[in-house]
Structures are given as structure tokens and as C-alpha cells.
Image 1 (tube, rainbow, N blue to C red):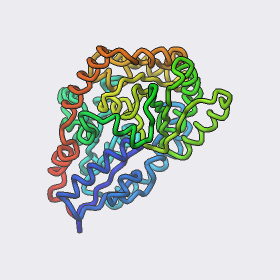
Image 2 (cartoon, rainbow, N blue to C red; image 1 turned 120 degrees about the vertical axis):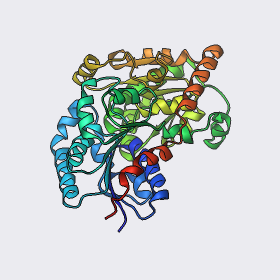
Image 3 (cartoon, rainbow, N blue to C red; image 1 turned 90 degrees about the horizontal axis):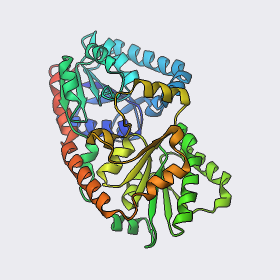
Image 4 (spheres, helix red, strand yellow; image 1 turned 45 degrees about the vertical axis):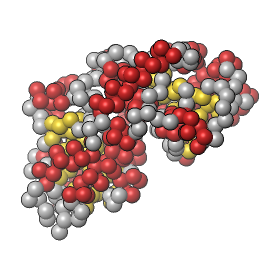
Length: 383
């Protein structure tokens, strides 16, 4: 029989990353079976989802605590299945708090445990390195500054780059995308991305709408694109729009199409996360914002090692785009920061140079490199 490879991926970005890896491994292992916890993109390439990825998409400490019992039950059930019928390897794609627990117990039983996407130990909780070293057989890192941290801790590690850098064009065609989205010539176009999770949209929707209202006062011909990933997040944003119906704003909600919205936009307002890297790879000026529960925010800031939360700033090692977070993220502050990008050609040219260098550094044929690092662990392990 072919190899059985267990995987866990916890949200939309992990689902995409894991689907690319599955396809790369299938080129070498056409009869392999992939199963575990995953999303629709993984399922589209043959993955058998025992639980959907969205079960793991919790947001912040409070949300994690509320869902702890269910998540703990899923994790224990999956471990029981893997003990009863051991896979050739286990691959945890992000979701570190969930996956590392499994990886430690599987590694102890002689099952190779690969973790794809380093936890943000460079940002906070560096003390996790010792636990990670005990849990993983190999770490696959997306960013070039991460491997040295693992080498010093004795963890086998590979830098594989970021898959988005492989698939995104170096020079996106904004005008062509505006034609595709049927955006007529005129004033500035803003893309507002409030996040892919329901909790993110709840926290940011009203602020985003109030920010759009201020910008519309300054630029009456402005247009606003709001891509939303799911039916639930779209409903939440539409509820917020109804609360502000008196504003009569030119806001166009898109079902998905976040990348298309960013390409078409002059400036992007984006919740911190993978979307900030997407905006950077698309060479778009942006303002990064975020709002979470006050206690989660206080704890994270206390444990943070870096002054930035946005990946473009972390990768650049300096603030190249504004971060307006938590209580500071008022509509006035966000509108001012977004307005600051319009018409400043020198600043826009410099940002484009920084983002192009970043893109080239991250473009590594990620899926192929990750598969090459994993294949040695699978030799001789067919059932």
C-alpha cells in the first residue's frame, strides 16, 4: 500500500500552503494518502478531511479558552487514530499550539513530525524553542531570518521561502484588474480587508466603515472594495453597513477576491496577518491595523520582542508601512494614515523598491523545497 501522511492545517492561509505541498509531494508519491484536518483547497487535491480546518481558526487567548474543550477533544481523538494506525509521517502546517502537542507525542513514538511554518518565536515566546526542539523532527521556515534560531537550538531546519512569492507576479497590472472588476476611471480606490475570521470582522467592521466615511468626505469620487472570505463574515459586515446606512457610502463587497481587490487598489487597509504580506508582494502601499480583546492585547504586547506586528515591517527590519493598532485605531487616525500615501510619488517608489527586493528574497519554489526536505523522512516507511 502507499504511504499515509497525516496533516493538520488550521485556517485559510494554511489550507492554501498545505495544498501546494500536497501537490508537490504527489509528484514524487502519486499513491500517497493525505488525511487529517484541512480545508477545501487541500480537499480539492485529494486530502481526506476528518475535521474541517475552520475548527482550529480561533482568534486570541479568549477565543482559544472558549473553544478549549472542543479543540482538546479533537486533538485527543486525532492522536488516538494516529496511534492506532500510525502514518508514515505527520505534517503540521502552522496551528502551532494544536500541532506541536501532537508532534511531540508522535515523534516519541518514532513517527517523523515535520512542522511547516515556524511559530513566531522571533516576535514573542522565544522560550518555546526548547519545547519545539523536543517536538519536531524538522522545521520548515518561510522567512530567511528564522533558520538560525533553530540551528542554535539543534533543530533540523530548512528555509523554503514563501509560496505566495512564487505565484504572485513581480509587477501586478492594476489597470487590467480594474477593467476585470469593472472599476471605471476616476478617484482613488481603497481596498479594505477586515480579516478572514468572524471575530476580526466583528472587531473592525464599524471602524472600517467610519474610516471610509471620512475618506469619502475628503475624496467624494473615492471607491471602496471590501473582500470577505466567507458567508458569515459577509453577513457581519453587511449588518455593520446597515447600522451606518445613513452614510450612503460607495462600498462594494466582494465575495473573496482579496488579491484582485488589492491589485486594483491605490491603498490598502488591512488587518494584521498573512494579508499584509500579500499586499507587500503585490507592491501596494498599506496601513496595518488590528483590534483584539484588551487582555489578549496587553499580554501579547508584554511578551513581544519586536516593535512591529506586520510582516512587511518585520521582514524589512523597520517600519516601512504604518501600523495603527488597538485603541489607536480610530477612524481619524486610519483615514489620515491612508491619505498619507496618495500622491507621494517618492515615497511610493521607495516602497515599491523595498517590496520588490522582499519578493525576490522570498521566491524560492517553496512547495518543491518543502517536499525535498520531507521526502528523506518517508524513505522505507510505506505500509
